Image 1 (cartoon, rainbow, N blue to C red):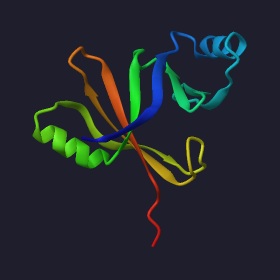
Image 2: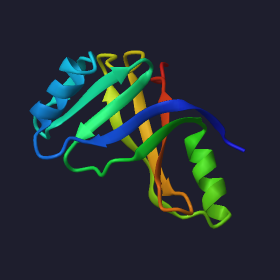
Image 3: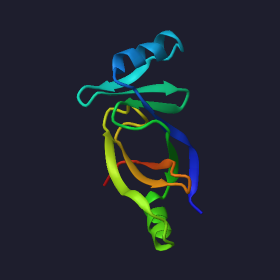
Length: 130
């Protein structure tokens, strides 16, 4: 069994207007933008230890779970016939430490549960030092 940890991130739709959506989360719910990248027009809000990821290009309802040993889990699950929609890939080098310790890389793989819900498995890997 994989070492699944806490919820790391939830992807939410920003609809057609990222600014309006972010203003709602700030003004109504009191949560501020943690990081924003234009382009491509995405933003992150921290709700405690959970990242809320806003974009108009991702459907709502994707849950991202921390996992230790992503590559090993992927290989084992694939060998058992579990289909992945995306294999483990590097998605971010966190040079500045915006989402964890500076220098870590963030890897993700995606699969769906039997109901069709998308699950992102996330592993943060510390840099290798000689």
